[in-house]
Amino acid sequence: MADRKGLGVTPQGEDFSAWYNELVLKAELADRAPVKGAMIIRPYGYRIWELLQAELDRRFKATGHVNAYFPLFIPMSYLAREAEHVEGFSPELAVVTHAGGDELEEPLVVRPTSETVIGESYSRWISSWRDLPVLINQWANVVRWELRPRLFLRTTEFLWQEGHTAHADEDDAMAETMRMLGVYEEVARDVAAIPVVAGEKTPGERFAGAVATFSIEAMMRDGRALQSGTSHYLGTNFAKAFDITFQDASGTLRHCHTTSWGMSTRMIGAVIMAHGDDKGLVLPPRLAPYEVVIVPIGKDAAVAQAAERLAAALASTGTRVHVDTRDATPGFKFNDWELKGVPLRVELGPRDLEAGSGVLVERIGSTGKETVALDGLAPGIRARLDAYHDALVARATEFLDARRARVGTWDEFKARVADGWADALHCGRPDCEDIIKAETGATPRCIPSRAQPETGQCIRCDAPSAWGRRVLFAKAY
Ligand SMILES: [Zn+2]
Image 1 (cartoon, rainbow, N blue to C red):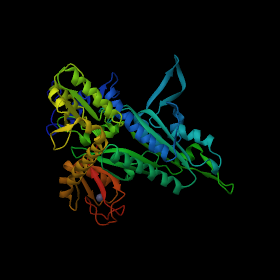
Image 2: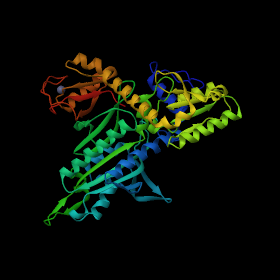
Image 3: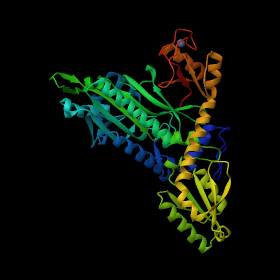
Image 4: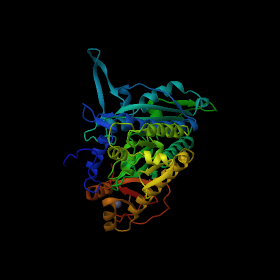
């Protein structure tokens, strides 16, 4: 692939993967790091993360959770206490064997996730039913050694939040698991403008040590799926491994039921690939570092002053606004802000100013260049940005619906998963899932929660279907 100079990126239709890699670098979201698989998140990308963090954190607190921080290093022996957990994570672990100039007595794992160290703490903090539920979230970095890294999608170190909760019984823990899945679904749709399918994972795709794993799956513009958030019901597996017990009201000692749930910087990859086009990023306003950029045309002092006045008026409505005063041509600036996915751009020239107007351009939309009265812009800006968000959701939903189908034959299945999603009946056998993956590249993404009850024959092997519903299959990141 020839390296494109300037601001242009390889068209999606030519090479989606090259489009993605070039865009992440050229839009200044992230940069490659000296260690393979690590990632430098640049300010423009980090601002998106901060905005997503704030939206998630507000919802976590509104559902009764509090934040805490647990250590980066975990004794190796902790991971070994939950057999499936250690087996699942072993290939991805980074282990510290030397520190302070000496070999350590016990190696330390750089956390790949924190169930074990948090579980050990909970065993000391919880003793009575009165202590429950414990609803804690942590904002942190984790390390999972990545052999085939891609910026934001699969990096050795990434940022995330991990919720860890402990409950008296299964009902309460399952309610929590589903509540947080619902929070992720809402954030994806109402903040990132991405419609998602929520459902349970089949056993082969479960989190290591979980009884049940649920995910939200988002469609990228190449038709592939991206798992964008997960919520796990851990049963009493970790409670037994770490002795998390409580005395119930009758004095009987019981194991807690625990959950964990997470969303990560991978979500930025979802935003890039769910909305972006051949001109670059298309950012949903609620995650856009700048919702509006004002480009003054020419060096006229009156224009510069008018741009600043307009920026102040927009900022007073809570809008994130930026005036681009760089020494560059207007054409360069327009292309640059299109590449960076800014929802609205206002062009302000001397002639516009005389008429008390500016030219407004939406990053996506059919209106083209629109002449707007400057004094009317600020009062209507929130409604306009909300409408832009709704248009993005509608566009992504339309795209998803056009590429998702219920399939009844193996030929239909193969054709649909080539560039989209197939809802199919499946026998539930892991070896049949493996055959489907080998022949088509598609894997079961989830058993959609909202699917209608349905039974029949497996799409691949004709055995009786499992799960009582259709399974969503797709090629995935
Ligand atoms: Zn089958």
